[in-house]
Length: 267
Image (cartoon, rainbow, N blue to C red; front, side, top):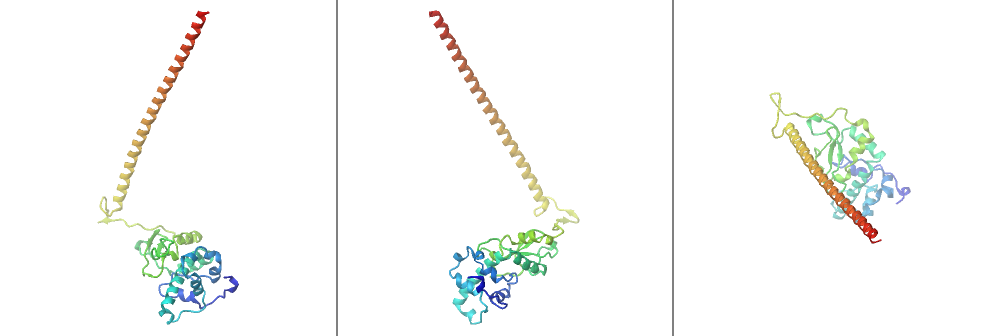
């Protein structure tokens, strides 16, 4: 399918699909991007009706109510949705796609971090896998660097439609959008005093880490002792071997001298 055969449609399937309920994370993929065979590489073998699904995506027409009640149409629609989603994951890491997603991010279209101490930090969509039907889309907070489920469950929005690298590429390109302040940490207190050595306290975690450190240090010392012992044994064995070789050479020299003296006596 060549680019010359593609006509840009203002009210086609793509616009209709992106305006569906719970599809506000999507941006509209440029049709010329979809028409480029390079961008379709590796996708054909994933679908039984690849060509038909691609034609549906590029269609200037939107589905009617009758279409949405047709089982055959819905089967093809599901393939078209997944194909569009995988193309979407590739498109949003291009300069054009990143710019579109930046606009959505600044408008807060992806929502805010559910963590109270992140103070309503805008989030970015992320997938936990690049494979289809592994998990639903999640949200990534640039401030606390953690992943959460979106406030509204999106049952038909797969995580692979965004991929696991998008937020990191986005923040690398638009470095000015990195939060200027680090995430605030909650500290457990009772009457103003920090809670120590209690389950759920960060100080308990730190203590465990310290214990692990000491354990690791002792383990390293034991390894060093074993290694030293092995080196000493190796040196002793080498020294013994050297002594044996020297003794052997000395005996050979004495034998040679004795033979020479016997030969002289016979003469």
